[in-house]
Amino acid sequence: MNDRVFVFGSYNVDMVSVVEEFPLPGQSVTSKGFNLGSGGKGANQAYAAQQSGADVTFLSKIGTDQFSTYAQNALEKCKFYRLHLLKSDEQPTGMANIFVRESDKENFLAINLGANGSVSKQEVRCFQPEIRENKVLLVQLENNPDAILSTMKIAKKHNVTTILNPAPYSKEVVDLLPFTDIITPNETEAKKLTGITIKCLDDAKMAARILHSLDKIKNVVITLGSQGALAYDGQEYHFVESFKASPVDTTGAGDAFNGALASQIAKGVVLAEAVRYATAYASLAVERKGAANMPEGSLVAERMSTTVR
Image 1 (spheres, one colour):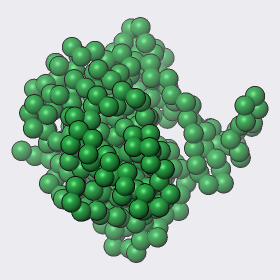
Image 2 (cartoon, one colour; image 1 turned 90 degrees about the vertical axis):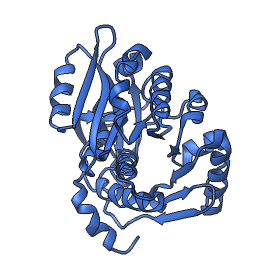
Image 3 (cartoon, helix red, strand yellow; image 1 turned 90 degrees about the horizontal axis):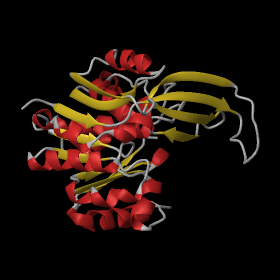
């Protein structure tokens, strides 16, 4: 079996505005820069996995609106092993409005799921023969929960390793946990799942222990932003410090991490080393403008040879 990753996830058109400060309620601010590009956690993570050397099949759903041709062209340029784009006549192509603060490159965003939220269980089930051919299934929460659950059940049935990135957080995530082999929350998502506010590494370890106990999730990976990432397999903790980087845009850092992680797990790399690779890959991604602008995996070796931050 080769190094194949099946990604079921979202595609969004990203409308990115660079601002000096985030607007307060009722306030208008002047954008210092604007960009229209491809995004969506599913598409970003699929491309990161592809750039990291995996053979990626990407399944998503778009509308039949003014952005559908843009989406099709953008995704075809990614040269995925296989690309499956379902289309909705009722819902528009997904859209994300993103604000990036100029000083520290932090961001916040509002997402309209559009067609991403209209994938049916029946549509997903049509891809069972393809899902079973992969080593890893990677999903996020920008699609409707019942379709995500159906996909994960298919993967578990055929012993495909499942990676759940619980972002953006939704309470429906609890239904997915019994079918999750690796869960990858950030600090905010880990708090919502466990109630633990992560202020230090010990807090992260406590949250990881709680997550591991939920529905017997085998492996927990908590991303800690600029601090790095913590992995826990039920026996040992593996903390990976972040690598030195010069951030330009942090919007797609988590997506870069998850896609890179999936690629390494598909290759049979042990969890601790897969997390180290993903951390290095994410440090390269934040040095590029645009959430979908994922670096080539060939650059990771050099970054990993450098000292951490």
